[in-house]
Length: 284
Image 1 (cartoon, rainbow, N blue to C red):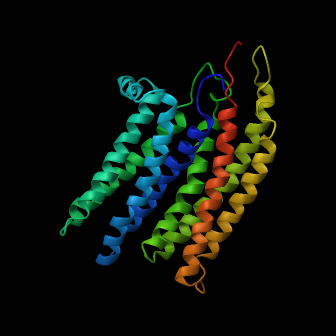
Image 2: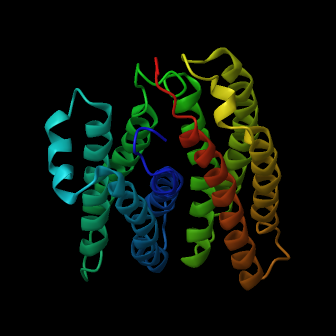
Image 3: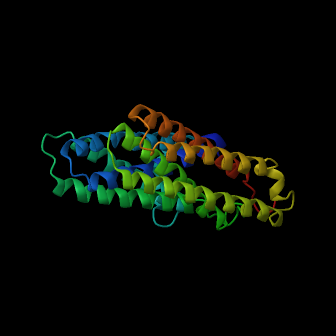
């Protein structure tokens, strides 16, 4: 890519960070409606997992800034730069979730404080995903500056995030059957919609070109990547659905949700790599 962006690190970021944010929202929903104190405590502890996923993705994204000092300049554009808005939203989400997790270790952590804090952190997580989806609205990069870019990122997050949320609920040993079923349904619908949008995006590339080449030439394997995404994502959703069956033991259910999470993350990562290979500026 002529822009100097690191495809791999940014693909890691846009795979893990939005998924981690939505996984936190899933855990927060379970915590908000938890009636058992012990389950609530376990959910508070498990918020470290989506926080860690988000943090790993955020650190990976920082590699394309060149030097750590450049990160400070990013904040000067908050409100007018999509990249600055994305970084600011990520920092706010990490701060809210990290501070919540640390405070939750207090012996007495009242729900009157925990619940509004969780709601605020969840809103920050959704805002982060929104800002990330709009960070590539660059007029000089016509292959990124399309409606497909934010839609595909949201659908990828809605595929991986709920699946990871289901895994984290299993790790916390929380039986939230209705929420778990809803998470699987959301992930499956996101996979179907995402596959359709990826196909339409692929078809649209023939109409985008600059003075040197056509956009579709940048991603000759895009069609194969979409097929791989669909098959791998379907396998992940099936594993997630099977984990809800009543005959599944806790250990089996945990293994299935773990496998589901890995499969959907791989499915998303493959399409994110293709997205970054599509960097094509106007002119030369």
